[in-house]
Amino acid sequence: MANKPRVKVPKTAAAGEVITIKTLIAHKMESGVRRDSDGNVIPRMIINRFAAEFNGQPVFEADMHGAISANPYMEFSAKVEESGTFQFTWVDDEGTVYTTDKKITIA
Image (cartoon, rainbow, N blue to C red; front, side, top):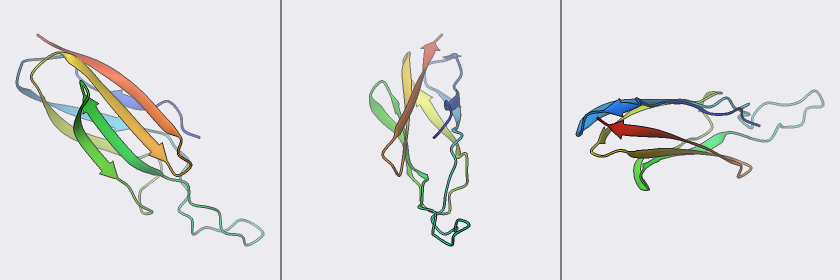
């Protein structure tokens, strides 16, 4: 139900630098309060969890609820001490997991 997530992480950074990470996932969100043409409630279908890890260690996590917008955008900072890989994970109400990862090199 979602398109490939878009993530922006600098390719290089200095040791100890605080970097900004931006993520966006296109996902058709349903709040669970709209009704279809027959008057039936359309079931809720949102991205309800986002997590970012660096080299297997948690960096940022967010639980999302019914008021989250379609195509959720997340921006956060992280301090990098070593080269490695950021892994990003989104989970929706059906349990579908979307992942992507980005590498960063300490110059």
